[in-house]
Amino acid sequence: LTSLFTIQSLTAEDTAIALGNTGLGIFPLIMIIAGSLPILYLGNKIATSDAKTFIDINFSTNILALKLFGSKKNLLYTFGVSAILGTITGLCEELSFRALGLPILARRFGEAGDPNILLGLLASSLVFGLAHWSIGGSWKDNAVVVPLQILTGFWFGILYVLSGFNLLVPAGVHAIYDAYTLIDAHRTSTSQLQYAQERSSSAKFLPIGQTDEGNMQERIIQNSRLIFYLADTSRDGILQLAEIRAAIQQLGYRPDDSLLVSLFKQADNNSDDALDLDEWNVFVELLRQQPAAAIMPAEKKQRLLGFR
Image 1 (spheres, one colour):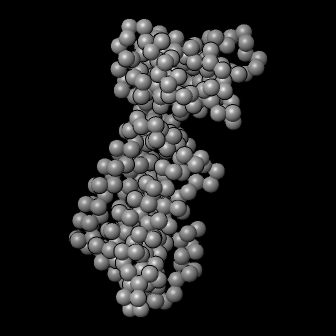
Image 2 (image 1 turned 180 degrees about the vertical axis):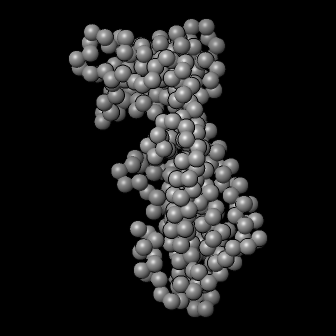
Image 3 (image 1 turned 30 degrees about the vertical axis):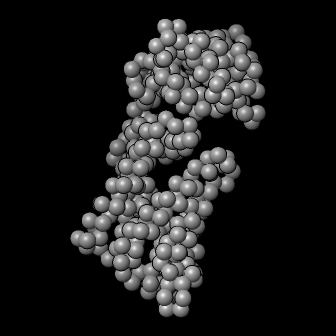
């Protein structure tokens, strides 16, 4: 939609500026490869971070990848669709925010015949970040996503300027970053899901409803076991506090961190700062004993562990 609006808004002068220096050769290819490395490094650090700030964002990315490509590994299909989506997104967004937005804003902030490239770069990056505000998303998530997108937009803008205003350079880096993010999220998610299913001998969660009182405990134990191995991202058969924090947060629970640490220490029977499966079951039972209002937002109706 942004791209269609951009194309409709382009004047002949804007078109000449936006596409006049577009071309592919050895130097643009080198810039695409070199320009991809820092942003891929940053993306990988975020994807593997156990910081509370990034837990929900990484979880949303993983869910998106699973919805797009399914829960089974299919590298060829995943790679092909990711490449197509990345290319479309890269070309459309870079046409809008860099090739059109940056020069127009530079002229707006500069003097006649002397565009202010720096201000144009900063302003277009800000607009790019704000355009990624998630309608319906939480303020907390948007407070993380928008600054990150401003930062990536600034990097795309730098590459655009350094390449001599060659649209294909930021579009190429953008496409590589988006495609890699989807491919890596799907690879990580399916691999962890397979590990959890094999170790827990369970293929899926069992729903717990109002009529399941008779076999509720059995279902809670099975769900708890599956959650344990899904959370065991280090695959060492124990859960560190960071892994538990991520799992609890992804399930929709929001206990105060001091409460989480207290329950963790109570369940850690051998005081090794990690929970094995038996200790994890104790932790789950301690968590279930807490008032629902103390561990989950009012809008959440999570029943996987038997909360009312």
